[in-house]
Length: 314
Image 1: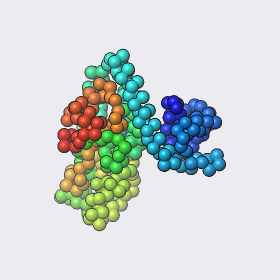
Image 2: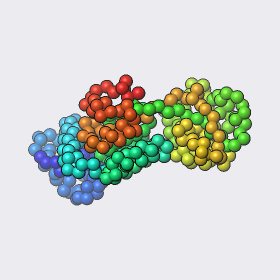
Image 3: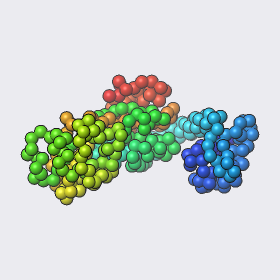
Image 4: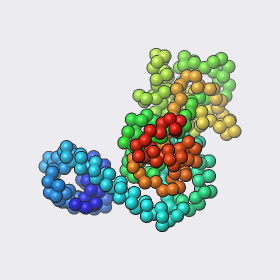
């Protein structure tokens, strides 16, 4: 048994049990991977993959256990490499942060600025994506840290640390009737075309829950990933928008007006997400604490080792 065989097995699982795709992603041959997996099965004395001719259709029950152990071994191997890099490189290295557009555009710039002042030799990479994509990047080892707003279920295979809450607002074009219509209600919002986030009406969204609870169906005419896109179309008069309050900057957003909607929608929680049992470089702890001062190294380590951090983090 060797680490390469375990890597082959992990890559087959990541590629939907398609050996050809696994071979392409690892820059090796399909027959070579198949041979190594069969050697692993012979050594362990169990069948790992269910085969139908040349196709792999499933993992066997022992195969799922072997894959789980292989994932842990490979994570620990990566951690060993990180230990060496930590003590040989000092304050230099790389850090990949996976996050949503709103966090990348509005919450992270001052944090990154302070971080680079403290660690000028660390190269930062920012990858934007949906919460599901962020979770996948963490699980696959592409990202070191994830920052997103999503339910615990989306990140059930990862460690998540709640660190901040944020609210939503309604934006309108200049001189819109809602600006002088008194307290904002869901009924008033539903009278106008609505522009909001792609995920606003997914199952766990506070926006969807609010409208569903009131038995109101809004007229959604456009959805987008980025708050800047929502603002641009509201400014053009296509409708009104619902977006994160942090995404409105009165110094820049001269073409729209903001109406507070805290009373209409539940606040959402921003979470830091990490791979379970990850070994973190010292500067990653510092980055997390710069973003969320309540998340000290001790709090993060307690979470990574299975402790409860919810009370400490919020």
